[in-house]
Image (tube, rainbow, N blue to C red; front, side, top):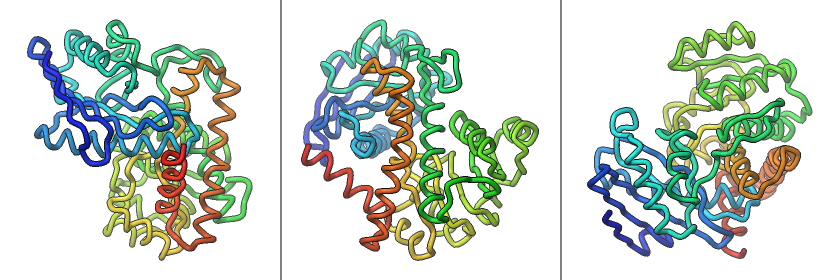
Length: 351
């Protein structure tokens, strides 16, 4: 196993490359900032076109985790790891075990969790070689019973709390009854968010590339199906992006008729300037890494051994965090994404 460390890449504390010929593992771990604690972030497996593309992704994602953890008030830093390869054809027990051994070389400075291309089962294989993984323990569900380490339910519930905050600030309402919400993406998080919204009395318009998920939302949640191409232009109160990143861009923003954008997708703004574009149109934007922090909160609570009551309390805290952020944005007349960055930096640079 060949391990190469590079310091001072961008503003990161540490970037480590690993190549294990026996298993075929090629991986990168990026540790952005540990001023608040160990860097925690998902381990992604993806068919990157090149090592440079993988490096760019892991640097961007690890930086985002620092900001997410800081805004969630967690004593954690930001990090991320990527495995270069097709998760459907290149993944093996040997490779996952090699990744676990690789993590041991970082001595706990980075803690891995599941991400795109990896699962709780994969992390459990890594855990046979390393203690530096999280999100693999069965825990009480917010709806009763036990669930596995998948943090998706907490991400969805936290996002729902964030939507409540956006509605309170923008529409001066304490409930969602009768509000129209366009949910873009019905994956693990998006569908659960749609369930919370429907239970709260919202009227749903939904789209997804999986027709079975759409059909389920129609039959079980009373949703109306919309094509992915038309979802942006719907006459709704809230647009909730819960699929791919960079969906808020020069093409989509002019189409929006919603007064609120609040959803669970990562990296929603194609560029930072699009936060200003939303503000200029009078659209309230809930910064993605603030509203979708439920997953990292879930994993942090697991690591601390906190029970469901503590987890629920911290997830509900997303509501007040966003209210404070929205109030400061209004007071300073600056985009919410810029305010979120400033608030996060104040927390992890002075911690």
